[in-house]
Image (cartoon, rainbow, N blue to C red; front, side, top):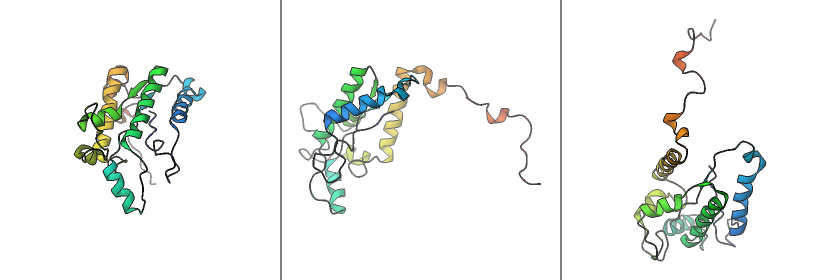
Length: 183
Protein backbone atom coordinates (compact mmCIF):
# COMPACT_ATOMS: atom_id res chain seq x y z
CA UNK A 1 0.00 0.00 0.00
CA UNK A 2 1.23 3.41 -0.94
CA UNK A 3 -0.60 6.01 1.11
CA UNK A 4 0.80 9.48 0.46
CA UNK A 5 -0.75 12.86 -0.13
CA UNK A 6 -2.35 14.15 3.05
CA UNK A 7 0.73 16.14 4.05
CA UNK A 8 1.78 16.83 0.46
CA UNK A 9 -1.57 18.61 0.02
CA UNK A 10 -0.69 21.44 2.40
CA UNK A 11 -1.21 24.78 0.75
CA UNK A 12 1.79 26.33 -1.00
CA UNK A 13 3.66 28.61 1.38
CA UNK A 14 2.20 27.04 4.53
CA UNK A 15 4.53 26.99 7.51
CA UNK A 16 4.62 23.18 7.67
CA UNK A 17 7.19 22.89 4.90
CA UNK A 18 5.31 19.80 3.70
CA UNK A 19 3.71 21.13 0.54
CA UNK A 20 4.57 19.15 -2.59
CA UNK A 21 3.37 20.63 -5.90
CA UNK A 22 0.67 18.49 -7.51
CA UNK A 23 2.73 17.49 -10.56
CA UNK A 24 5.67 16.56 -8.32
CA UNK A 25 3.33 14.48 -6.14
CA UNK A 26 2.11 12.57 -9.20
CA UNK A 27 5.66 12.06 -10.44
CA UNK A 28 6.74 10.85 -6.99
CA UNK A 29 3.96 8.24 -6.98
CA UNK A 30 5.01 7.08 -10.46
CA UNK A 31 8.67 6.83 -9.44
CA UNK A 32 7.82 4.79 -6.36
CA UNK A 33 5.69 2.22 -8.17
CA UNK A 34 8.01 2.02 -11.16
CA UNK A 35 11.19 1.74 -9.09
CA UNK A 36 13.23 -1.33 -9.92
CA UNK A 37 13.07 -2.62 -6.35
CA UNK A 38 9.27 -2.67 -6.65
CA UNK A 39 8.90 -3.93 -10.21
CA UNK A 40 11.48 -6.71 -9.71
CA UNK A 41 9.26 -8.32 -7.08
CA UNK A 42 6.08 -7.94 -9.13
CA UNK A 43 4.42 -6.51 -6.04
CA UNK A 44 0.67 -6.11 -5.89
CA UNK A 45 0.36 -2.41 -5.33
CA UNK A 46 -2.55 -0.52 -3.87
CA UNK A 47 -2.47 3.26 -4.19
CA UNK A 48 -4.51 4.90 -1.43
CA UNK A 49 -5.91 8.36 -2.03
CA UNK A 50 -5.42 10.93 0.69
CA UNK A 51 -8.59 11.20 2.75
CA UNK A 52 -10.60 14.40 3.02
CA UNK A 53 -9.90 16.89 5.77
CA UNK A 54 -12.14 18.72 8.22
CA UNK A 55 -11.26 22.41 8.08
CA UNK A 56 -13.23 23.14 11.26
CA UNK A 57 -11.27 20.68 13.38
CA UNK A 58 -7.97 21.66 11.73
CA UNK A 59 -8.57 25.31 12.52
CA UNK A 60 -9.27 24.52 16.17
CA UNK A 61 -6.29 22.17 16.43
CA UNK A 62 -3.96 24.68 14.78
CA UNK A 63 -5.24 27.54 16.95
CA UNK A 64 -4.56 25.47 20.08
CA UNK A 65 -0.94 25.21 18.88
CA UNK A 66 -0.75 28.95 18.23
CA UNK A 67 -0.88 28.52 14.45
CA UNK A 68 -2.80 31.20 12.61
CA UNK A 69 -3.84 30.97 9.00
CA UNK A 70 -5.02 28.17 6.77
CA UNK A 71 -2.65 25.30 6.04
CA UNK A 72 -5.04 23.00 4.16
CA UNK A 73 -8.40 23.18 2.42
CA UNK A 74 -10.87 20.47 1.53
CA UNK A 75 -10.82 21.54 -2.13
CA UNK A 76 -7.02 21.43 -2.37
CA UNK A 77 -6.88 17.99 -0.75
CA UNK A 78 -9.45 16.73 -3.25
CA UNK A 79 -7.03 17.61 -6.07
CA UNK A 80 -4.45 15.25 -4.58
CA UNK A 81 -7.00 12.46 -4.23
CA UNK A 82 -7.96 12.93 -7.89
CA UNK A 83 -4.28 12.95 -8.90
CA UNK A 84 -3.67 9.68 -7.04
CA UNK A 85 -6.59 8.06 -8.86
CA UNK A 86 -5.28 9.34 -12.19
CA UNK A 87 -1.80 7.92 -11.58
CA UNK A 88 -3.37 4.58 -10.68
CA UNK A 89 -5.51 4.62 -13.81
CA UNK A 90 -2.57 5.59 -16.04
CA UNK A 91 -0.38 2.81 -14.63
CA UNK A 92 -3.11 0.16 -14.39
CA UNK A 93 -2.87 -0.02 -10.61
CA UNK A 94 -5.50 -0.79 -8.03
CA UNK A 95 -6.60 2.32 -6.13
CA UNK A 96 -8.32 2.41 -2.78
CA UNK A 97 -10.31 5.64 -3.08
CA UNK A 98 -10.42 6.47 0.59
CA UNK A 99 -11.31 10.08 -0.17
CA UNK A 100 -14.55 8.99 -1.86
CA UNK A 101 -15.31 6.38 0.81
CA UNK A 102 -15.08 9.01 3.56
CA UNK A 103 -16.97 11.58 1.50
CA UNK A 104 -19.78 9.16 0.76
CA UNK A 105 -20.08 8.44 4.48
CA UNK A 106 -20.10 12.21 5.10
CA UNK A 107 -23.03 12.64 2.70
CA UNK A 108 -21.20 14.40 -0.12
CA UNK A 109 -23.30 15.31 -3.15
CA UNK A 110 -21.41 16.35 -6.30
CA UNK A 111 -21.99 19.98 -7.17
CA UNK A 112 -22.45 20.97 -3.52
CA UNK A 113 -19.79 22.24 -1.12
CA UNK A 114 -17.43 19.55 0.12
CA UNK A 115 -18.08 18.17 3.58
CA UNK A 116 -15.20 19.35 5.74
CA UNK A 117 -15.03 22.69 3.92
CA UNK A 118 -15.70 25.92 5.78
CA UNK A 119 -18.07 26.74 2.88
CA UNK A 120 -20.64 24.44 4.50
CA UNK A 121 -21.63 23.45 8.02
CA UNK A 122 -19.44 21.22 10.16
CA UNK A 123 -19.76 17.54 9.24
CA UNK A 124 -20.32 15.12 12.13
CA UNK A 125 -18.98 12.12 10.20
CA UNK A 126 -15.64 13.73 9.35
CA UNK A 127 -15.41 15.06 12.91
CA UNK A 128 -15.84 11.46 14.15
CA UNK A 129 -13.28 10.03 11.72
CA UNK A 130 -10.55 12.66 12.02
CA UNK A 131 -9.16 13.48 15.46
CA UNK A 132 -7.79 16.90 14.54
CA UNK A 133 -9.23 17.31 11.07
CA UNK A 134 -6.36 15.39 9.46
CA UNK A 135 -5.27 12.37 11.52
CA UNK A 136 -7.39 9.25 11.93
CA UNK A 137 -9.49 8.25 14.92
CA UNK A 138 -10.06 4.52 15.52
CA UNK A 139 -13.25 4.62 13.40
CA UNK A 140 -11.27 5.87 10.39
CA UNK A 141 -8.73 3.08 10.82
CA UNK A 142 -11.60 0.58 10.87
CA UNK A 143 -12.90 2.04 7.60
CA UNK A 144 -9.41 1.85 6.08
CA UNK A 145 -8.96 -1.75 7.25
CA UNK A 146 -12.36 -2.99 6.06
CA UNK A 147 -12.08 -1.13 2.76
CA UNK A 148 -8.67 -2.67 2.18
CA UNK A 149 -10.01 -6.16 2.88
CA UNK A 150 -12.95 -5.58 0.55
CA UNK A 151 -10.63 -4.37 -2.19
CA UNK A 152 -8.30 -7.38 -1.78
CA UNK A 153 -11.24 -9.77 -1.87
CA UNK A 154 -12.45 -8.16 -5.11
CA UNK A 155 -9.10 -7.64 -6.88
CA UNK A 156 -7.04 -10.57 -5.61
CA UNK A 157 -9.34 -13.16 -3.99
CA UNK A 158 -6.41 -15.58 -3.65
CA UNK A 159 -4.81 -13.07 -1.25
CA UNK A 160 -7.84 -12.66 1.00
CA UNK A 161 -6.78 -13.74 4.52
CA UNK A 162 -9.14 -16.72 4.70
CA UNK A 163 -7.59 -18.05 1.47
CA UNK A 164 -4.00 -17.90 2.67
CA UNK A 165 -2.30 -20.90 4.18
CA UNK A 166 0.29 -20.83 6.92
CA UNK A 167 3.85 -20.00 5.96
CA UNK A 168 5.16 -21.94 8.96
CA UNK A 169 3.53 -24.89 10.73
CA UNK A 170 0.79 -24.05 13.17
CA UNK A 171 2.18 -23.84 16.72
CA UNK A 172 0.19 -26.90 17.86
CA UNK A 173 1.86 -28.96 15.14
CA UNK A 174 5.33 -28.34 16.61
CA UNK A 175 6.99 -31.63 17.57
CA UNK A 176 7.90 -32.49 21.12
CA UNK A 177 7.41 -30.57 24.30
CA UNK A 178 8.33 -27.02 25.11
CA UNK A 179 11.69 -26.93 26.83
CA UNK A 180 12.36 -25.02 29.99
CA UNK A 181 14.79 -22.13 29.81
CA UNK A 182 16.18 -22.99 33.26
CA UNK A 183 18.60 -25.77 34.34
